[in-house]
Image (tube, rainbow, N blue to C red; front, side):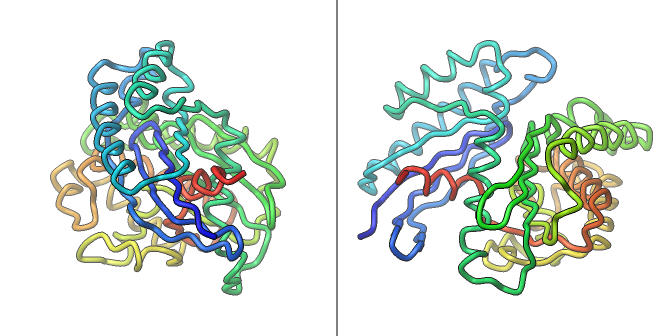
Length: 311
């Protein structure tokens, strides 16, 4: 018997909604509504330690629209998960109170380990069912706005670590010019390398047989590498990108101006300013772990959150 659930993932850069029918018997997940809005909740958090008033209002406006969709579809269970930005902010109670008032649920500001576990479930549940010739263990890489999660596992999570590098954080911290200078790119890369060192202390990266990449930075890089005329989830989902393709796209993005990046057909307007940093995070990790390719997944923490409502 299927259950209709809703999952909301509120990150540093975007807030996303999934309404789906889940069948626990077969493991099938049927999308009814899947959407994303760029709200940049983490605007300035790395510098100020607080959620900006305008960022909160953008997020609350999206919550109002999501409430309408959830009510219209007759959802039975809802879980709202918030990640890096609201975990770090001094005024996170203001965020929590606003979400509770608008959606009637307590937003769960989860720790990095749980974030990693949810991402792993969302990304690998169907890989386990389909096989696809992918070798295990998987290293699931979830590149967000404020943090990146490294999760190693086969049928379950064996090791995980969340580190504070993401496309928004690296852009605000280092890539301030348009396009960024060579020195800025090197500084960002050094920051990413240091974060990989931190992750490697807990996650044996050399054991990974298949790299699975999640979230908007990875899927956007995939869309560019595939030369798509517009964003196409079906084409991007489970595509495989060679490291040379990622290197070429990252180099192109980091050398481009705002206007040139905005003109790329698959580019969401909210990712124009931060996609160069996201591509750099992906490339640096692939180089470090020696991954010849990355399997791109459109299913991620949002799907993991949906499944977790049945636990």
